[in-house]
Length: 494
Image 1: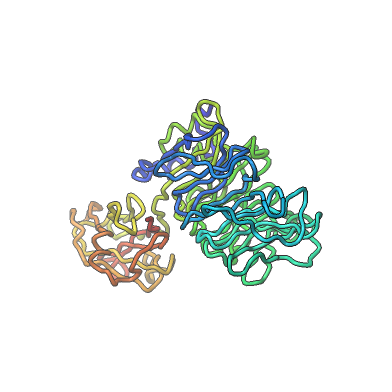
Image 2: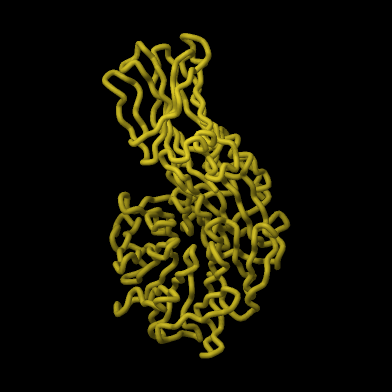
């Protein structure tokens, strides 16, 4: 039982406890309406469907009814089963009644379909399915090409089974696939496992966190973002996050833990989940986001610090998957009764502030904020506020969709222009408050603005789409006679 918050989580409290609205939405839910010892192995990209196994049978769960329904009965190897986002489709293993093979990579969509092999088998198995794309059209994994060598494969209904690493003489495996099936990641064992990407017919090695062997050291890619731009995995006992521009980013491991792996990543690549410890049975579920720091943090400690005190009664062993919007995490652990149970965590991401606010001629430091992420379907209020503005000043809020910026506002100014162009501005308003004081404020009702501007910049807004905002107001004695707040990055949720 966890009774105190660890030092690693204490450093987060000042940032995390400020997000009061997001804190109210945090939850830890046990998925208990099924057999004992059921371990979730995958979740759909929208966070609404789960698939798992109790070691013998395959089960599927829908969030709205929270009941595990049996699919496969004690015949297949289900531990790597994954589930699609659209029509109900599961990639797993199941016996092939035609060939007699005991375990065959298979598709379940109400009936079982065995995937064509790469020509060989080992111990009665032609291979293993490891992932299915969010659209349900692509399955990846490994298949045996000889009894001693297995290769990564991609399967589609139109193209059949394709060997991704033919004729190399080394085994390989595909662990994950992007939403549309265009990017596949895993490992290729040339001299030990090496994290690998297959994209557009080209195979790329991602490198290693081993400082003595950064090119050929051991590594493995285990998850990929919706568009294939961010890849996560493990190397040299640490979790990693890879991008084309930044290469391997070391996400570390928990203090005193010998190992860590990142297993899943959100659609935008900014929420990473996995485990850290000795192995799956002696580990802690971990999560990483940029605002939490450079290293993974203990998921249970994080939940406790955000007010979900029931997390202290659990041992969250492993986080296996995360939704595209980063707000839902699936995994399994030991529940308060001491029994293995799957869990569903909701962890909405608070809007992210960045850049440096200017200091006004009266010493005010304007600060922009929002209580929660906006909803693309207007499901919740979203009012952006710029506080600590000089009183009785004309101002507005402007926004862009091209990303962050950091450019001096002008010679002698303490402000920075923090939103990439093009930008669109709200209507001008008066800050209120008292002249010469820092009690003025600007506000933008983002829902009302979007409804009033259906063809504005960024419209129509969709889940996962980001917006960057900043406050501007008059300050006549200042350089350029104006000043700017810091900036805000928000990500739209469903």
